[in-house]
Amino acid sequence: MRIFCPTIVLILSILSICAHAAPVNQNLDSRENLPAWIQGEVDNPAFFTKKDRQAYAKKLWGVKLGAKLQVTGSHNFAIYSLTGYGLRFKSSSLIMKVFNAVDNAAIGEAKALRAVGDLVASGTVSALGSKPAIIMKKKAGQPLQETEAYKNAREVVREMMRNQTFTLMCDKMAIVATKKYVLHGDNHPSHSNTLVTLDKNTVKSVELVDYGPPKTYFLTKSVTKAEVVSDILTRRVSLY
Image 1 (cartoon, rainbow, N blue to C red):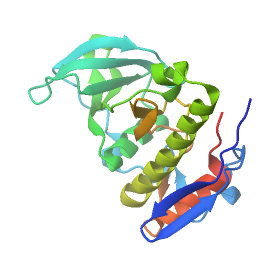
Image 2 (image 1 turned 135 degrees about the vertical axis):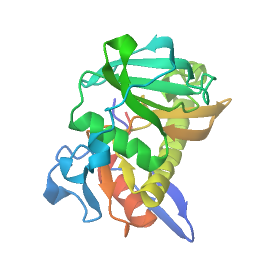
Image 3 (image 1 turned 90 degrees about the vertical axis):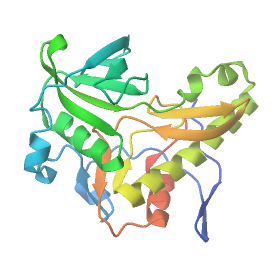
Image 4 (image 1 turned 90 degrees about the horizontal axis):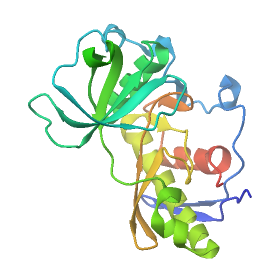
């Protein structure tokens, strides 16, 4: 059953925005349907510098593989937790995504992760047949629907938790968009790209993961938080 988001209030400095979320626009990738402050998707080669194109040119040394995690996405070969990387990173605070090949999607994701400050390293992994990979910071939390609190809650409480997640998710998206000029647009409260930390049945914080295409965009530096939140609420995100 599809449940549309009720009125949500986000405090944007001194501005409060209340709106209802509309269904996901299936034509968001069409240029004419994007606001002027969106430059384009992260896998657009027009954005790539020489440094970006060489993101996977070196070998990654000192990679200590942990558990192999569930693979999602058509471009991905595998995702691993790491028990260490090089001399600086010895904890389990890292995740490594391995790609099938170096393509625009892989280059764009590395560029976007660097922009938001989550990229640790990129290159090839000899132990995995010299496949390209990115090492990134591991984010706290888990998808809302995978938490025991959500599974065991009554539907009225679940709806409250989804709404809390939606509000925090919108705010996080807007903060990243206006500080790092990257819009993480491929998410909703029950998506695996949105991780939550709970205090009993209350959603305390949200983290966004996976900055690859589709629907991850580079933005102009003129974008405002109010513009981003208004666009999210009116056109981009719905509850499932």
